[in-house]
Image (cartoon, rainbow, N blue to C red; front, side, top):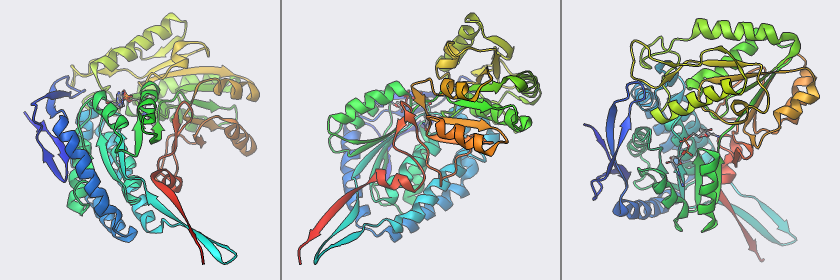
Length: 478
Ligand code: NAD
């Protein structure tokens, strides 16, 4: 059986303990391959090689770094299908998606930041003879810790700004999906990124904790659950590390009576069932205006029933894949039970599924609950599965207040033809990523990140350069 190693100092490195963990293919329930856990020796080597890699990398010009990163972009695109297949096997998401989104959006982010690398600059100001100038310098060794839903994309989104700014990175993928990051590390080396600049350590939360508390690491960029994010911040406080936090959401999608209803239905389906609902920005609280409520439900349910092809994620027709693990599968089914018990009306779905071409996978039917209340568990908590909750509203001010009534603030969407209302409502949303008459698109140019407990800092967009550099001010006496 294939055994994956840690990737340190430009090469795969065997561990000295023989400790491994299994990676399960969510579509079959079988062990896909084994992964070696980072032992003490590997951890030490990761820090030492990142230190050395950082010194080489930071001394290169932005233009040199840019050229190398652009080669990595070309390699990622060349190997799109091979990498997408790894993502399908690790995550259970459909090939239909992974082959056109996951690698593409990862490569786009590296391309975006490669373009910015030579443009990172300080400024200067005259002080009446004397003057000062500023330098934007890299932070040092950054740790990246990833979630399992977009493994390769997350590794790209974290390494792209870090490396463009001249930092080194030690990346820990989720233990559910460890392979994509190793492939990225290999591609970086092939493109000419010096050894040690991007290392991959493997293991569970204990390896994550080691990264967050290590005093030689300057920053942690974390993607995962809110609760884990809080632990990471506590760990990072031990040496006052900078943090970027990309955490969970329970985002509102608000549909007014003048909305283009077919568009709004498409957005609700995409924002709830894409990647089996395992997307942090999903619009899982769908608030629909009274006047179009019944019609919306009719169309959403019809299209869910008509369009869903659930099954082997590698099959080209499949558009809903398997959930990440048996444990998560059970968790999602428990939420569905809770929804029913608390009085939400099940309009479609609601069952575990056993498709003929993948009978042992962790599948759940796309599920629509209607007539939901704001107090229900399924409306309040992030489910991270294909479960949509539809709620009724009649007043703009009321829906704004209800949409914001949560400790999370990752995303929000509004559908209306009234341009003033669209902007007014979006400006009132306590959310970092917003969409008007669209949902879910997030190009590399656009900053992403959450308000409230959904996050700290941003990924993608020019703003992110500030999160991977520190400012040095130099006073020059004349
Ligand atoms: P998780 O928090 O369980 O795990 C995330 C990572 O943290 C894993 O690599 C895990 O090994 C590691 N980890 C666990 N305990 C740790 C500790 N004490 N210290 C350091 N690291 C530790 O999250 P998950 O289940 O992998 O991912 C799902 C969650 O991620 C959802 O809540 C989702 O909303 C969120 N997410 C957010 C974004 C975003 O951009 N905002 C994107 C994708 C996923």
